[in-house]
Amino acid sequence: MDDAQALYNSPSFLFPLADRLRKKAVGDKVTYVINRNINFTNRCIGTCRFCAFRKPDGYILSIPEILGKVRAAVKINATEVCIQGGLLPDRDVLSYCEILEAIKEEFPQLHIHAFSPMEVHHAARNSNVSVKEALLNLRKSGLGSMPGTAAEILVDRVRKEICPEKLTTSEWIDVVRSAHKSGIRTTATIMYGHIENLEERIEHILIIRDLQKETDGFTEFVPLPFMPSNNSLGAGKQIYYGFEDLKFHALARVLLYPHIRNIQASWVKLGKKLAQSALNAGANDLGGTLMEENISRSAGSRNGEYMAPEEFEHLIREINRIPQQRDTLYRSINETIA
Image (cartoon, rainbow, N blue to C red; front, side, top):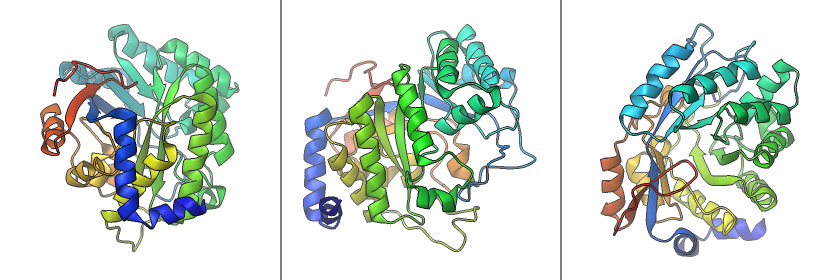
């Protein structure tokens, strides 16, 4: 812990180290995925203080409406749809399986990256089944992988302040461990820059590292800076993105090396130019095209909802790196030659 803090406070050493470890882990290719986000509802029984997306009188997409969005994604050659939504009081495992099965029936080749650990926990509870049984049913219905969201900060002191009704640190770990053991790979995220301190950020990363050593189920680590607009946690706060974000991405690369190969810089959260800079500070992936992005936008993001593959390629080549389209599990598509 002390070494990690000292490293964070020595950027002249941290940045070159992170960049060197990035090159050892993945070389000079920078990846991105053609995908679409589908947020199927903004209604939620949750009380997370950082959420600007939840609306008590919001929308719920029907399965035909979801399929319409999937068709539009397939038309632009998306290999993945990412499906998440608020917690509806009656939403159970069967209802999630129906979404998956409808998509797979029409698009059997499409990878479905869906349902956060909180959503799985909630659905299992509503169905009165174990998390393991819920995950097995979801996988059978077509779930390919899961977003490792709902992690926020994996420290219960912080969780009690920012999301007291959400699953605890140990519950999040248990859902993700069960997913990995069920053959469902996940991402890992952290939402930083609110009430947590550096020690708690580091603790979060070390939890992720230990779980990866155990299961080898994480595909990537994604630092997500807190968006302060339109939520009670961010009231009166101004967040400035820049040098501290780059330091944190670099620290993540160093602490997670060699266990997690891919560090993603979120262009939606950071902005395109800062995400590009993070590629020289340990990151090697820019995420997805998205097509729509409702959650960050509702919390104040002004970085757009869609980035075309051509723009990814331009940003990557601009810093003399090699662009590479990938799928959700980081397998190369249309291999790029430098």
